[in-house]
Length: 360
Image 1 (tube, rainbow, N blue to C red):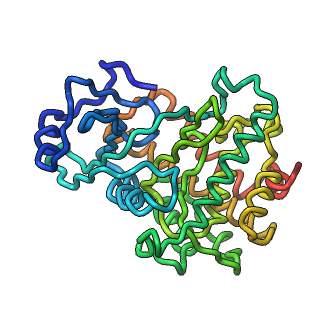
Image 2 (cartoon, rainbow, N blue to C red):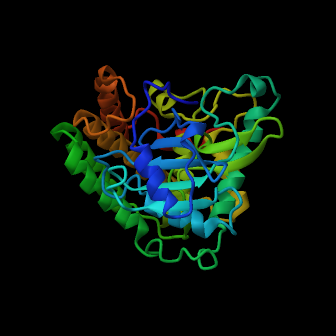
């Protein structure tokens, strides 16, 4: 859960304490500072503010534009406070980079267990646990998509029109910045495929953009959801794309090694739903139509986006700008190869997308 003290990324904690004191927030350094070991691209610290546990989030130096946006996260959490009970309360935003070198935000700490591909021992033997966790996550996602953005004061968070076009073109531009020539040629083919198959039905809602069980805190005894984390990419967009980002991480025991590597969910758990069952469960909660060709589009876009995100992280690691995130750089070659495999899968799939998405 936490890095060892020697692994922990240092911060100017005395300076942070003095800064927060000017905002009536007392940082207790005697209570200790712990850095969470989870998180691929953020530094997250357990701190104590005014006698209560809190979480301080800092982006790494060298973040890509639009990524690790703690100001956005603070705004979203502030708006969701009365609309979505799973969002931790926002406490403070510091946009003065002179304090720590980057902006940071502080939010409420909530107890709970994030779930990855391997279940905690306390849950592993529960019958049908996979089904229960799948339904819990999909119900929370559908509930997020029903939030009234006007009531939440988040209607200016993004443009309602043109979301999918911006996604396709934006990830295409990012690909040009970070991919080598062979991979870029495949990426350009994917962008052209996406341009030619944009869906006509375009629902709009808040979208989380990284909704999966390891971004949730579960009460393992009551099997209830305590919190949804990592709101820095939240915007107004297409809820069906948000669903397909979740499905990208879903996993199946029948998957190829490539897709098993992409899984972030406990797909070997008893009762785990197939992707098709998960899609149907969500659609039943949302009343959106089951347009298989549109869902294949969203799947393709989600997979393409994931490949470019990984390529961006590789570029930051190689530039030594993300020295605060602990990665074995000897594994970078393997990760690079995985980006190439994803792009190749998109232009020349080894398994038909309909089979991946709609097989039960």
